Length: 213
Ligand code: TYD
View: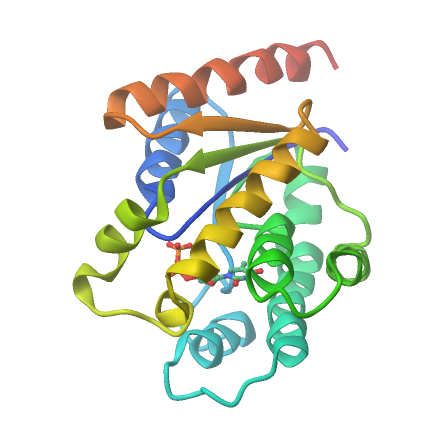
């Protein structure tokens, strides 16, 4: 595989989408083929991933059980891996993902605190075939701040899950960063430019590696 897979993780309202857009622009200006995705989701309105997203985020689905929730995230992910991530990487593209498998570990595993975290890892392996990002940027924010940002326009189903849930999500993410320090880099909250500079400091060395391959 000749491309590069970079995922962004963090709590709701951590500014991932802004940082992904800035990084994509910077990489494209250097001539890279950059493809961006967000999970849960698809690539066009009405495709299976987008329809799964609607189910997952709709606050009306209060009865959705944790295992069903997890499997829906995994189904949307499996489709993106097969149809977009693997082909993109094979073509030498830089694949940028707004959330990936670590989100399921953080939210359905640590956040919901019902299923063993190992079960979430197992389902991630099944959905992704073991595809692991080259780099994961964890944009770490205090949930009190992040949620205020994220819910300014009305809370979705996950954002309504409560403060203790979002504290567990954050703690789970930090544990993952500790467990895999080579892959997962923690980027603290700060002004947009400072966060972008920190992101770039982690991405740039990988580009050098790509060129040598
Ligand atoms: P979204 O509006 O895309 O939020 P954000 O901008 O914070 O990414 O909604 C995605 C929501 O789904 C978010 O609350 C995190 C949650 N989520 C999971 O619980 N598990 C997962 O595996 C993924 C990918 C997302």
